Image (cartoon, rainbow, N blue to C red; front, side, top):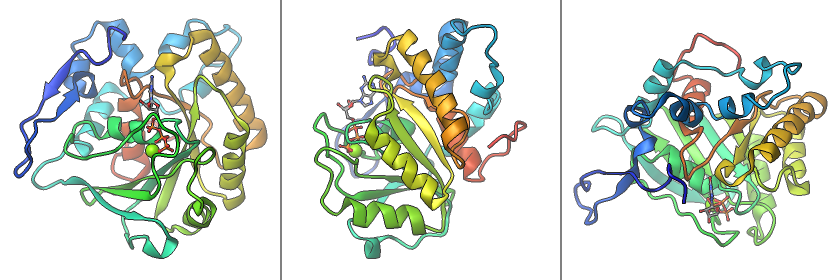
Length: 286
Ligand SMILES: Nc1nc2c(ncn2[C@@H]2O[C@H](COP(=O)(O)OP(=O)(O)OP(=O)(O)O)[C@@H](O)[C@H]2O)c(=O)[nH]1
Ligand SMILES: [Mg+2]
């Protein structure tokens, strides 16, 4: 286990009516992140910064940092992900068929990707300041079988999806495709790609689906704690070219995350706050 992972736990008192005390990783908060030495903090908040040093000078860095909020922006975004008596963050419902989809009006974001790519883990990391919100993760592919809806106050909804590929639910196509195509309040789809595995055939199928429906989506590279830097940089360059040449509704900058070490989680929170219309930023690139 790395020096950053798992060691520092911030224990929150149990919510009324629950028995156990749940713990949240300390690096999940900006307050604790700010106590880190400069280099480590930078790596945690802006994971691309670590790769940048290895990038050839000829390569334009700007396109890797289109979304470049300030540390103060990240702090503001954190408030949206922090529950309070007036701002409840909770699991709200599940759907296995399109006619089960809850009718909601607030902006929505969803997470799609191959089974086991880390969708539920990423959502759990995003919600780690609300540890009473239960997001189930598993080593076994095909764990999430339904569309699970989580509400973040009145600000937005977030949807965890079943994975495609090995052990995907039988009715996956009937469920996920119509959702992506018809969901009126869906403002952004996050398409996760495993950093270790790189772009796979099934990822390309998902890209094709998003392109065909013309929905705005973003590539998120997961498990970067398990990926060698050289491989990660190569993947990032490949994704940049791929997005430029073969997509039209994909955001030009892929995001990098580790749900174990919390790298990129604060940045992604801020991006979600922004695209759901809950946070204005100086840089308007989304
Ligand atoms: N090292 C590392 N492991 C991760 C990370 N994210 C997820 N995992 C592991 O990957 C496995 C799958 O994670 P899940 O979050 O359940 O994946 P999923 O995409 O929701 O999978 P399905 O629900 O089956 O589609 C689990 O064993 C996680 O612990 C990460 O950032 N780093
Ligand atoms: Mg899952």
